[in-house]
Structures are given as C-alpha cells and as structure tokens.
Image (cartoon, rainbow, N blue to C red):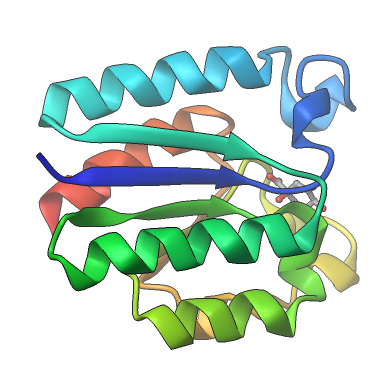
Length: 147
Ligand code: DQA
C-alpha cells in the first residue's frame, strides 16, 4: 500500500474560523476526514500533518522522500500556506527528495493580492491546484491516483 502525505503549513490549524469568506467553514479535522475518505477510495495510506514551522514541513518532505526511495509513496499534497510565497527551503526539499508533489491552495491565489501570485514551490511541483475550496484536497489525491 502506497502512502500519501498531506502537509499543511502555517495558520491552516485555524480553518473554520480563519477568514471564512476566503477559506470556508470547514475545519482542519474536516479536511483530514475528507483526505482519509479519498485515500481509502484509492487504497492509499494517509499521513496528515499541520505545522506553523517551516522546518517541520521540510522534515516531513524528507520523510516522504524516504518512502519515495522505496517506491512506497504515492505523492505529497502540500498546502504550504504563506511559505508558498517565501520558502526556498521547501523548494530545495522537494527538489532534493524528488517526491511527486501537488501544490494546493484552498483559495484562488491568483485572484488575490499580487504577493500571493508567486510560488517558490510551483517550479518543483508535478501540478498546482487552487480555488476549489477544501474539496481540492480530495481532487489532488484523485490526481495522484491517476498519475
Ligand atoms: C493558502 C493561500 C496562501 O496565500 C495563504 O497564505 C494561506 C492559505 C490557501 O490555501 O488558499 O495560508 O495557501
């Protein structure tokens, strides 16, 4: 059974109360359930994490990379939050491990402030998804299954 890592960056622990007009009313626990259901449909094991710390995200990408090296990783779905727009360390972790990664955003970042239009991660991502709300997480897992 291959594993999917779903990694969430800073402030995503606040889902449900954080700017609901932008991010919706569902909580991170709801997102985890939705990901678990999508993984179950495809026969994937799920590792679901959130951290407000950049280095923790780097460490989980390294862990996913070790599974990738054993052909035991389906891929990584990464919502890096604001680190998307700032983090060379996350870009280097993705490139350094060679993991198949989908960059995901709940909101359509291109319809928002211009500082959200640039992603350091996109250059190393297999695909980039944004604007589907939290349903995008399930779509991203479906996408990994289809690769
Ligand atoms: C986000 C978009 C980012 O610009 C923002 O900093 C977030 C969430 C999204 O899911 O839409 O924290 O990644």
